[in-house]
Image (cartoon, rainbow, N blue to C red):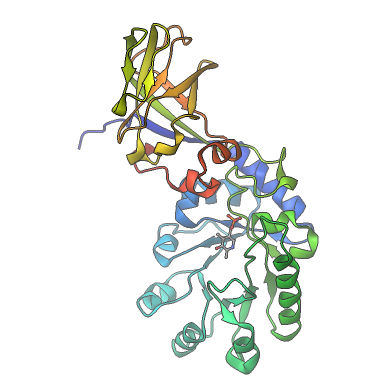
Length: 345
Ligand SMILES: *Cc1c(COP(=O)(O)O)cnc(C)c1O
């Protein structure tokens, strides 16, 4: 095989990642602070994220599926891994063999885990009002969990990123459950939940988006640093005379004689069409606004002020999540997890 360098790269700042985790760990008070690694570490590369955070002292990691768990083997020493989607019938081989715990999500999954006769500790998710995954409170209280060795009992907040009454209702429901279902630890808060205050932290928090540079609520503003830096290579720089148009639909017209950098990047890479009108990049500190539409594999930027930029140079995309989310209408989660395979990580 010939090694071909990709014209797209996604730089991960491990310093920012670790700094974000440390801030979230401080906000978690006495609770341990874990890390959600699902969707390949929100698109950044789960193995690298796990390596950096476990070296910083993070011990509790979460993936969605057993395939994601397999991809993280072997685990660093002293690390615990939980699989949020629990165990389906076809997961049982992996669940028996891997050093990871299922988060059991239904009476059916509890039965499956019991019948496997492992007797090993598991995690359990209780639904306190989101109606996504988890045993209903009345199921949990009617003996479904009797005899299980529960390492961590979880619930998940539906509206933690908003000032909603649902947060305190879920908190009260989780506190009541905690009095009745024995487990070694209890865990409720995601990134936004951590910002709601120490009442929500219990024994373990499970941040995801804020680790990766997302600002889940106003309280985190100014404390969370950008982690993911997408960069794309310039394919060519062309002179576009005043009055001519650029790209599909001729949606942008040069108001002066311009120099346009055409970049190896498009919606097939997750750089979506809604960035048109607000997107941009920088090269050597110089701003290059996006012009015209985003194509499948190509996007044009106005490089008129970027003196010296040429073929092969790397454009840093504007990708501060809170800002770009507000401009594009995409969620901070979509901005990260949408970045495609052609980005070298
Ligand atoms: C994804 C997820 C998290 C992390 O959520 P963020 O909003 O990214 O912090 C925590 N807990 C569960 C159960 C999740 O599914």
